[in-house]
Amino acid sequence: MKKFTRTLLSVGTAICLYGATAHADTIKIGLAGPATGPVAQYGDMQKVGVMAAIEQINKAGGVNGMKLEGVIYDDACDPKQAVAVANKIVNDGVQHVVGHLCSSSTEPASDIYEEEGVLMITAASTSPTITEKGHQMIFRTIGLDSLQGPFAAQYVIDKVKPQNMAIIHDKQQYGEGLATAVKNTVEAAGIKPVMFEGVTAGDKDFSALIAKLKKNNVDFVYYGGYHPELGLILRQSKEKGLDAKFMGPEGVGNPDISKIAGEASEGLLVTLPQSFDQDPANQALVQAIKDKGEDPSGPFVFPAYSAVQVMTAAMAATGSTDSAKLADYIRNNTFDTTTGKLDFDEKGDLTQFSFVVYDWHADGTKTPAK
Picture 1: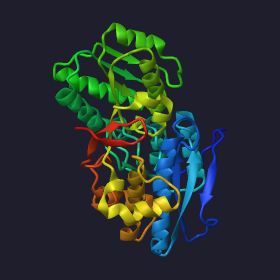
Picture 2 (picture 1 turned 180 degrees about the horizontal axis):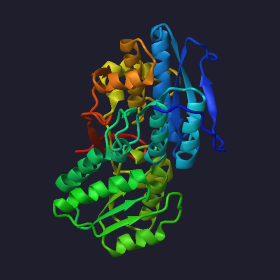
Picture 3 (picture 1 turned 30 degrees about the vertical axis):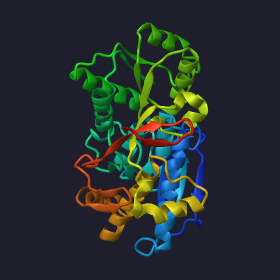
Picture 4 (picture 1 turned 180 degrees about the vertical axis):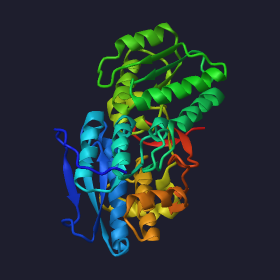
């Protein structure tokens, strides 16, 4: 793979070092995702998982006699900033990355990592197109939209059985991809959505959308996107008397949606990875995270922890930090992690991953849906 120094793009990229100043016996792991911006909460989930893994592995003696060091790079979930971050990671000499988080940021960054021979494992980006390019350095420890969308749709078909369904998305790679997968699946089962429309991320007033939903007598809405917009849609729908049930992906499964929507978030359906923090095998780790005043329950915490486990297990097995050797080992072996046994297909995707439908509650908690 061609190696060269890239010219950095000008961007306000926040970088923090965790642990001691880097030494020759330190392995840097870059953590790329939103530390700022409207979805920084998800970036924090990723950080909690990665830093917990680094701490636990270092306590156990590190890897091949070396300690791990986490380096945070903020892309604000913006594709242009993600490209600048990826360039900076290359120029900083970091060869192993957990991230990025948003699919629209991960995809352009992954092209740079592939070209420059940097190993990347995303614990949160679910768009199938990321791993459809034949890249050899790119992996993920979470399921794809092509799994989550049909899974959500099947629940709608079997359990909800709406009379007039609308599908709304935020026009971004993640949200629109999920919405399209849901649309294709419900249509194949004979449910024809009365609306399939996009909203603009960052909008605050959804009165026109809600008026159209009411005009079409919509009783069920699937939303593809993140919690800031759906929180406002839920709140404004309740205020305007729209009597419809809503459903969204893990991008809305954040307690902040209840802070935005209040009582209107009660009964929201959310598809999420299974609650790995409830696994009895993970309770010592859960307590360790809680003891630091952090929340172990976010959907990306344990997939991020597992990403570090996969990387370091490959390092231990190969006796190397060479990214190409690690990528080859990861693609051909199975790993015991906090999210179960993981193995990867030729594209770098997990061979299996389970999602669960939850009922969301106004206090920011969730329970498995029936």
